[in-house]
Length: 196
Length: 196
DNA sequence: TTTATCATGTAAGTCGTTACATGATTGA
DNA sequence: TCAATCATGTAACGACTTACATGATAAA
Image (cartoon, rainbow over all chains, first blue to last red; front, side, top):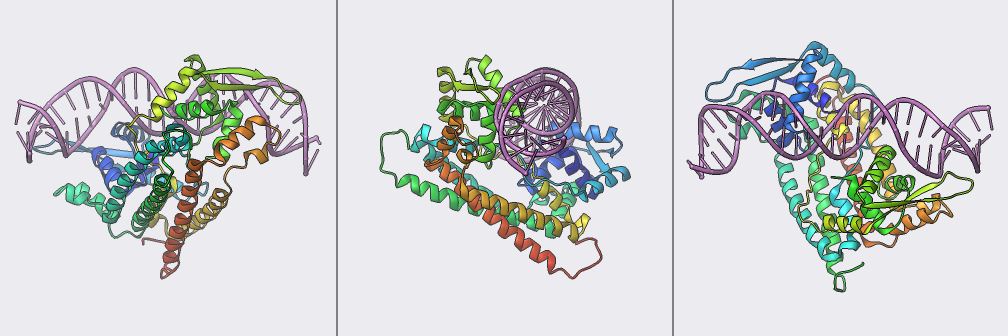
């Protein structure tokens, strides 16, 4: 299973609606978990039908209503069982498109690789910048108690600090790595686009 | 798409059978791409039916026969198109179970987190050890020309060196990060299992 | 007036995992 | 003799993505 426990965990702490869960994933813990809205809504419904979540409609003027989900007692139990269960895997299957392209670098020539490394470094700069700030959900959604609570889950929490520290350290390393590779590519005795 | 181009790329360089492709993924570029055998076989068949791959049976005494696949001209063209196409995404969706558990660390207590960090560090030691060696396919499959060729794809190739260097640097960083976190957890004023 | 944000969903399709089936050979 | 390695597959399921549909308000 997957998304499943991310939802049960979050909704064990605070009630949220689908849209705010998506925002939390993207803004606060984007280095940890990703999910599309459509998947979130579907999964929320499935968990409610299993009795692990319950939902209520929150009326809003000026805006569409929200369906707030929260974990039931059974949902909390199910989550805690998972959280304390030992069979955990560290090696999540990797499928990295950039790395795959790099593997075939000698077939495309160094110019392509150089261009992609420069884009990669740009991207990592953005990641690094974001990882320093932590979550800014409360700022982006002022006077929304749901977002404020979701934000607070991460602020002042040691484990969230660990997560952001990891994102910062990893992006730092990847920038160094990419610059190293780029330097080697640029020092190449410029031949006319071919094998390495 | 995904596995798709990994296969076309590999089979543009050298003919391989399903089993050896799996071995190449796992042994030589496990930080880049992962796939189950069943998926590889299914995808190979699909690509052959599209005319992007062709296959021949290689007879063997003492062992089951091999079905060797290679990219057709159309397959090679299709692959090169992809390789030189700009719309590349660096942000592959992340779903990291260990990190997700860590996010909810304050609900499980520091002892659980400590245990998992120690396991994580063990795992990363193994990753680091492996990333130094590069691929050892030729050693594991002596007198198999398919494996020898697959292995050679990576040896002496600058881009493969880049890949292994990244794996080495990343595992190094992750070990440092985990040790840092573990130290902070161990310096905690031992309370009886509860909130942070 | 058009675009962006907020908000919830459905449907179809692709991608990936797990379980099962088969069968020979080699090494412990 | 039992497990592991080599080798190829099928079937069923589960997870994830993409495209579509709707509709309000706020800002450019």
